[in-house]
Image 1 (cartoon, one colour):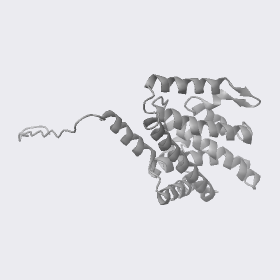
Image 2 (spheres, helix red, strand yellow):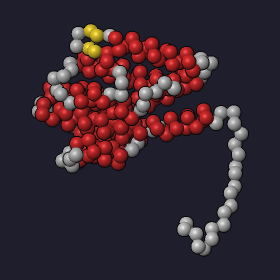
Image 3 (spheres, one colour):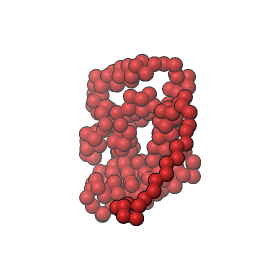
Length: 228
């Protein structure tokens, strides 16, 4: 289960990073001339439309916000159907990338964890159908969250620590390690760039656009009696 989950998470994490980077190029390229206020209105309207939709078991509010409440709901096996989980995954996958690239981001870390939890919920239901005990479903969701974060940001050790902080337990650390490092290694082999690194480079580029680089040298004499 950890090996299969790690492979699935790697595919989704690589796809997520590619979509975020592509959206960034779209906003900074073909849509470069669109004013910032217009970008914010576009994101706001899309978010509002999603939020008011309620069809059957689908509630648009679950697709909004950071995703902390959604993650808690996803740990309950019978909370959502396959279809609802899949629709929520599609919405959050593309809307988070869309809003983050537009400059209207509502955060990256927790929304990213919610995507991992949604993937884990789908995989958990599949594993139960394949014969896994449904008591392990919530564990699969947690493993998926950690692995997605570790793969997308290329921070496997942080992902391991995160799992311990969430569960206050070391019981599943071995399985967390297998899932996290499987997804991490696959993303490294595919050579998709880490999410935070690219977002940081893009932010620095935007902040310094049109400015001239300057090198400033400062020299200080530290006295022998100084505290430093």
